[in-house]
Length: 283
Image (cartoon, rainbow, N blue to C red; front, side, top):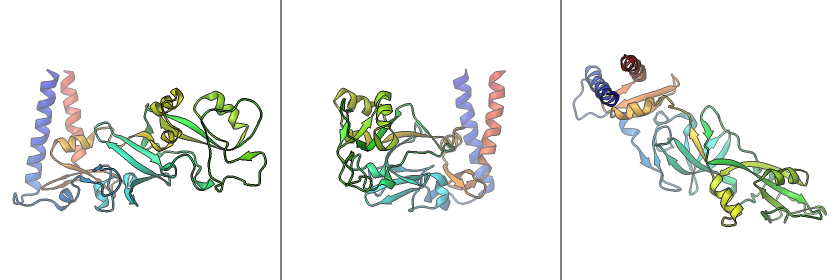
């Protein structure tokens, strides 16, 4: 019964939108709204082949096609996104699950960036993103003191970069570590000059622990984020009604573009009908 009502409700919304468009935009069938046309999905021109559509947008289109916090940019051969003033490489976008896979740009070649200023913890804009359950923190330790006794696993050598003191007798470029358990995180905290935490895939950490993965994979394969906008699924309703979602920067909220024109109050209309539908479904 509920599924039948739900299908009927979706049809009613689509019909109302179409009628509403015809009343407000009595244009010829050959007309296609410029905003609707310019926000069509397209493939990225750099990095992996990724479908770019709302909430993402890039310099090849107008900013009303995407949310202001989801601007993408080509830097060389990499597709990137800026979050809290830090640049990340975009590896994958899953629009069905709202999951973005990214990696820290300074670790694209492995765990040894070129400068100390690149050794930073990862911070998110929590109004836009959350970590997924597939991600966890690993700790990277640099410039560690050579001591007698047990050596931590997962060590790596860095060149003499800006965060290595070549004159030091206690600290050396060949003592850097990835720590994936609390025991070594605690021990190395007292032995190393620099520590940062970065999110990584749990599966990659598990492979490293089993001896089937590599240190490079830990930092280069990135991690997952789930974007939080459109949690009420307004843009999914827009798409179901054959529209394309965009963003009204003046009002600071999504907007739905249709071939015949845009509707600023579309989502208010949707919410009203959704509320009415929920009332009826409880009777």
